[in-house]
Length: 321
Image 1: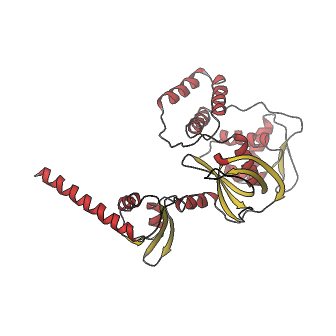
Image 2: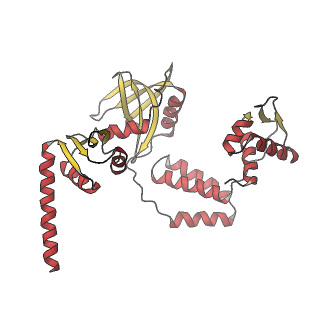
Image 3: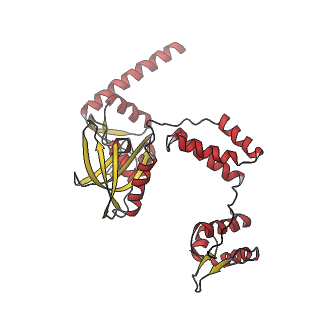
């Protein structure tokens, strides 16, 4: 729940950060009605803040031209949230290390001693066990691709494929995705005339074009990247019927392990696996009834795994007698 003072400060922040903002939009962000917004505006005016309003039921509010508010101070909880965010970004290489370090240093310099000591305590005591496999891509690259996806602007990139070959491509980026230590962008590749996933660590130069595009309605970049990873591991093509409803299957199978669809008898999992031994162990681990449809070799691996488990269990029982 918002505290009234917090709402008042939030209105002030919205007015400071927007040239003009409508009353209904303020109400939506604060989760209050428009009458409450009018009350907050009146309270701010009583405090000497020169807020002007446009006529009309949904008239917008704005600060008088030329008037600037002093910067608002963060609360202790807000500072803690910012610092935790910087720690996670540093751990996962979500941003350039120098950028996170300098941002943290600037924040610490202006903090009261008591709050600064709390921050130091968190930084020294808190440990994240998070996966990070790659260095962060240049901030300019992430910003350029994000802008292209947001504005529907085509991009020209220099891309190095898995074999080391470089190609110049024009792409319509639909979004930027971070997953399991890697950065990706997904969109329409005009060279291949198809939807493609590109790793950002393989993108060299980027140039935004003047050509515009429209992203397909309802397209989910994260879901597409995860499905592409699940189906592009290389090796064995796997099809397994999981004898559980689709919602249950989605709870058991991470989207980057297998693609799922509802079928008669349960949920069909499609995947590719570099190791059938790993896939067999995964199927045993999720603990639901299943039927291997492809490849037949996976059944042999499962049979061998079952025999090893049975022998290990017999030895354990014998040692307990």
